[in-house]
Image 1 (cartoon, one colour):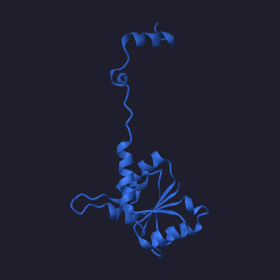
Image 2 (cartoon, helix red, strand yellow):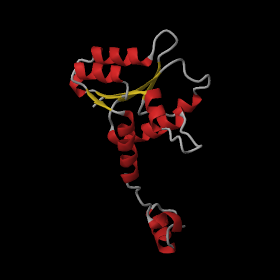
Image 3 (cartoon, rainbow, N blue to C red):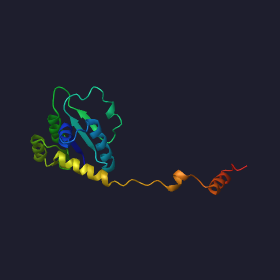
Amino acid sequence: MPVIIDGHNLLWAIQNPDDDTSITDVAMCQVLDTYFGFTRDKAEIIFDGIGPPDKTGFNNISNLEITFSGRNTDCDAIIEQRILDSTAPAHLTIVSTDRRIRDAASARKATSIQSDEFWTIVIKRLSKQKRSKEPAGKRAGLTESETQLWLKTFGLNR
C-alpha cells in the first residue's frame, strides 16, 4: 500500500519537548527506511522547502522516496496533488496531522493517519523485529577435523 508522509509534520510530531536530544530529518528518514524495508510498502516523504544544503545524509536511503517541495509550493499542495493523481486512492495511506491534508485524503477515500500514531506503529514494528542470531561457529571457526575434510574435498590436503 503506497504511503505518503508529510515530512515536517511527522518530524514535529515526534519531537520530545522534555528531551534535549531531538531527532533530525535524516535520522527520521533512516528509521523510516528500515521500517519500509520490512513492510515493503512503497513510500514517499515530502518536506517543505529546498531541504538542507548538504543532502548526503539522505543518500543511503533506498526504501523511501524523499521529495522537497522547493521554493514555489509547499508539501501540502504536493500531497494533495498526489492524492488527486492517484488512480487507486483507496489504497493510499496519508500520514499527516494537518486537517487540510486529512480532508483531501478523506474526499478521495484514502486512509489517513495522524503523524504521532504512525510513528508509534513504526517504533513498535521495529522493536518487534527479531534479530537473527549468528551461528556459534561463525566466531569459533571450523574445527581441525572440519578443516581437514574441506581441504580433502577440494584436493588441497597435499
